[in-house]
View 1: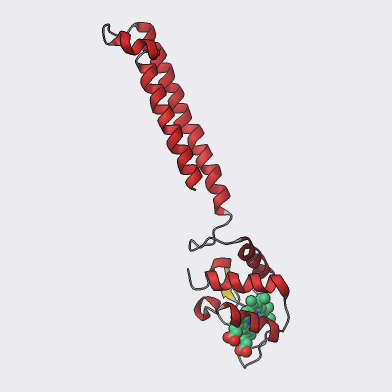
View 2 (view 1 turned 30 degrees about the horizontal axis):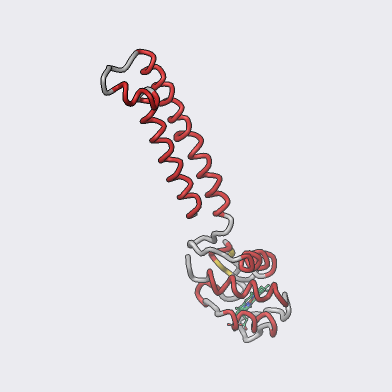
Length: 166
Ligand code: HEC
């Protein structure tokens, strides 16, 4: 986002400079204009350059910003949390293996078999323990070992990051 902002600012500065120079009839015209009124030709040139500037700022720049935002959006979970690559993988694992039984707003999950994770807000260790051992404490059944290794770590980190944020 910082890079995009810098790009926009540089772009703006160049654009303003170009307009100012064009309006005064080019670099040579700057001095000229101090003595004479603008000629017909110069004012035609400046309306053409104003049209060009409108095209750049009205169309090209919004397009660039929209593309940049679309790329950023992939990393954002609802609620404004920015996910790491691992948490991003955790979100996929959650959608495949957990969302049928658990509610989690950040994943649009509304499962009602197990506890609502937005309310529970389980820390990473609790989620890892639930995955490893399974759960059967009277509120239903969660099978052990649905996922292991890196995927288990990722999904536990993802839940710890997003639960209760929406
Ligand atoms: C078949 C349904 C089902 C699936 C699939 C499922 N769970 Fe569960 N989960 C449950 C139930 C039911 C409980 C509560 C069990 C109990 O009362 O002992 C639970 C409990 C939990 C708890 C709370 C543990 C505690 O001690 O409070 C966490 C955290 C959890 N699940 C995470 C996950 C994750 C992460 C996944 C995906 C890898 C997942 N669950 C998949 C049914 C499921």
